Image 1 (cartoon, helix red, strand yellow):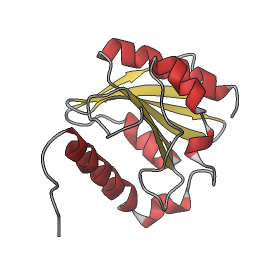
Image 2 (tube, rainbow, N blue to C red):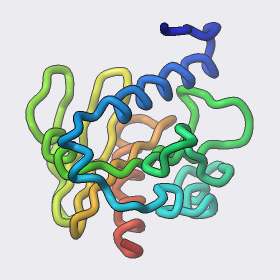
Image 3 (cartoon, helix red, strand yellow):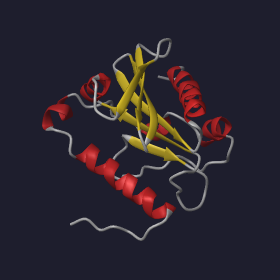
Image 4 (cartoon, rainbow, N blue to C red):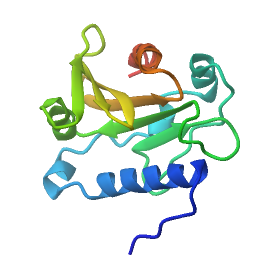
Length: 167
């Protein structure tokens, strides 16, 4: 049974988080065999690092799905806003990373060189752009919100390069 919360930015944030949870939790069993590292996505960046890149003070990274360390989000204190400045980072499986590179209707793919072993931007109308990065068997998706598309891509690339120094 799907319960739709009241309308408005906080409600939209809950809908997006619920959709993401559904996608992560509905992975086929084969994908589970190639699971991402048993690491905490919130360990990839500090609130200070994210605040510097986004230009706003953010609270410490939090797991939108409390039972999963694969996804972490940083946002300013207060109610979540769908159009506000924020960062979401998630570990991916190799299978999901490779599948993300294939053509899909309504999803534009843009390869990116010079970041990790392989990287690409995936842009979905209405949901924005995310940078998917592969490095030494680790697969990560970085998505920033609250900026024009070109600025968002620039910031995602900067964060990816920062992340690669610690992975």
